[in-house]
Length: 136
Image (cartoon, rainbow, N blue to C red; front, side):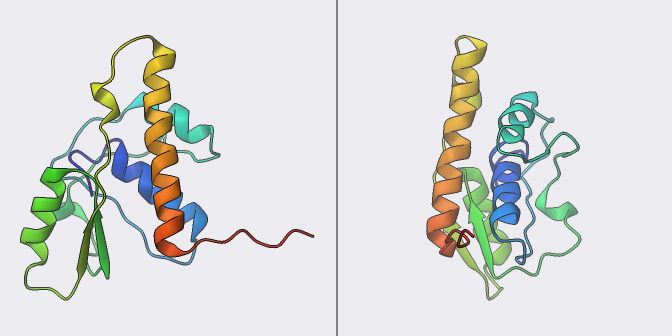
């Protein structure tokens, strides 16, 4: 869960689904943002297609029965704690930079998005104990 479900949470959900295909994963935002073309570019570099992703809020999810909610921004963390205070669900806060705050050339902006993608991939692997499949 992030602020607008346009950058960080869709990235995290796609990466998690790629690494752990048996897990049920969904992403949402505190409010609905607009699709971000930089996300599409950097996720395609990892073999993930987010071109069809349309941001939505937590209230718009069909299924809200989660064991874990990972929040990636302060406002998402606050909202998740409000929503789950009467539920048996864990909420973890992973502070994640907002790449839209970076300015500069197109390549510098893309690098900021890549950094977020790569940080999320590392954190997801560590949190859920990902190990590569044996080769051969």
